[in-house]
Amino acid sequence: MNVGRGLGLLQIVVLPRNELHHLREPSMRAIARSLSCLGLLLAGYVVGSLQLTRPSFLQAEQQAEPLPNAIRDRLRDTDRNISETMQVLQDEKRYVPAIQGLNAFATSVGGVDAVADLESGQGVDPETFAGIYAGQALAEVAEHLARDGEGHMTYKNKIIRVYSSTRLRQLFAMRAEFGPVGAAPIKRPSASPKKETDAAPEKSKDE
Image (cartoon, rainbow, N blue to C red; front, side, top):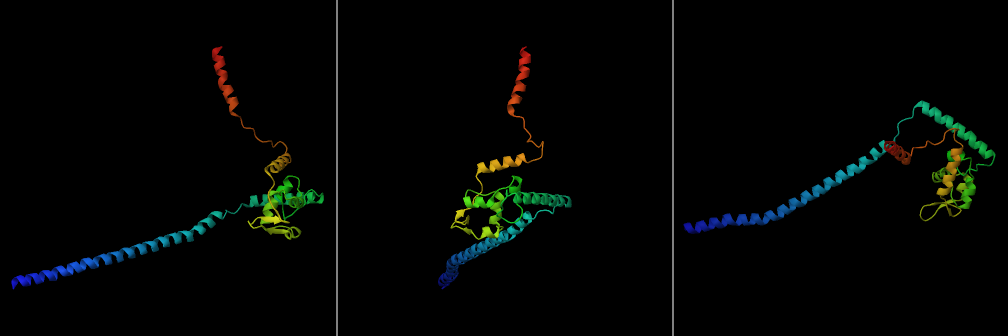
C-alpha cells in the first residue's frame, strides 16, 4: 500500500510538470510574439516622430535672418537703377521681355530678345527660364506655354531650355565689359614663378 501510494504521488507530481513543460512553449512563443510586435510598434513610433519633426528642422534652416536696414536700402537703390536701365533697353528695342518684372541678368548684359529666343527654341536667358517656370510669363507668352509628357515647359511645342554654355560665356564676358572701370579680375600668381625664384639662389651659389 505504501508503494502504491508512492507511485500515485509520483504520477501526481510528474504529470503536472510535464503538462507545465508542454504549456510553457506556447506561452513563451506568445510572449516572444508580443515583444516583437511591441518592438515594431516602438520602431514605427520613433521613425514616425523623426519624420514629423524633420520638416520643422528644414523650415528652420530655410528661414533666413532678416536683412539689416542698410542692406535693404542698397537693394532698393539697386532695384531702381536696374529697372530704369531695363526700361531704356526696352525703349531702344534691345530688351524684349517674356516675363513680368525685373530681369537683372538680361539688363546686365545689355538686353536680350527673350521672345525671339523662345521662338527659336535654342534657349533663353536664366532669369527668363526661371520666371517662366515660376509662373511669371507675360500673358501673350503664357498662352503658348504647356508641358510635355516629362514635365518640361514648352513654348509652341518646343522645349524651353537655358542658353548653351557657349552663349552664357559670351554674355558673362559682355557683362564684365560693362563693369566698373578698373575692376579687372585679380590675377593670382602661378606656381611657375615660384619655381624660378627657388632656382635663382642656386645659380648665385654656383657663381
